[in-house]
Length: 365
Length: 111
Image (cartoon, rainbow over all chains, first blue to last red; front, side, top):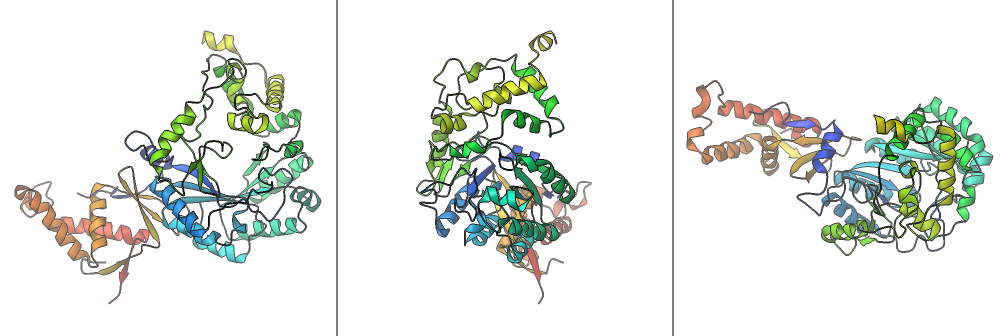
């Protein structure tokens, strides 16, 4: 009667994801995938950082509170959890929290700058491996790297940390955070990473600090540089065209949130507050003092939000391939319905480089 | 491993999850392993957790099946093409226990 599938290795994670999708029978389920900021503390002081403001580290959960929140996330059905910061290794109880989450049956990914990675943490991860370790790179030379991190000695520690993890065969993925101070070393970083892992990632979006301060935005690269880097992704041009042509034929409603925030992902900050995404922190849900029974209603209330402008981004033919989102607009412009001029400029540049959406062709098809 | 093997649970090494009505086993020592138990193996796993010798778990499960309907007793069904005898059931329990051991959910204890 037993068959070979009695205990099956769920290698097909997509099938598993289908199985655990929230909604329907149990409204108290969270999305299967989310992130938690264990701390906003960090050992480096990056020029572009969105959490480097006075008071950012106030009210962080202690070990027992963080464990209780991890339990709530597991009870809510979370399977894939990203642990991020700040710098996760700046928390003295990191290993305890990580192991707790593993023992709750969650598959973990971690973001780190690698400057605090040593033999001890490598041995720990070797014993209790994460699915993925993503390390941010701030430059190819010591001078540039430390110009970004504002921390002497951080470059050597970063390189050593990466070396230790790669030697141990840990699943390291290297990602460059591209900004004005290091964009001139983009090609060197890319080639270095290709030689090391063959899998190069980069991020070029800088957002205001969570307290609304905008001085970090001066580190943004120009729209021309931004679009030039778009072309580093092999299929970007084709994907852009397909999306642009498709969106030209559709009309947009007035929903403020049309992304998967809260539906496909969630985010928990270091105070134990649950958010629908990492950037939108205006309508948080207190996980330390509440179970998940009120989350669904709370989220639906945010999803009912509507734009306050009848025209603008929602009627823009570039809306689906523009980097703007309502959370970022709220932070940068003080109005979630607003456009973000930087992203409008990028969109114009993309049209110039990749061409206008082709409405006529698709209508005929 | 046989039915008289003594085992212990490795609860710290393998997490058990109930998600959307499915039982999942997640080995802590693996980066991304998730094992899904079907209905039958899930029931057997629940009973294995309550005992320390497979034979004892097996006895409870056999009694449970026979109590549901005497006509479908696994002893009486032994002769048919689709026979599911006590011996076959025990083999299944052994197979599932082996897989649980492979995953790291149970460990055989040497006497």
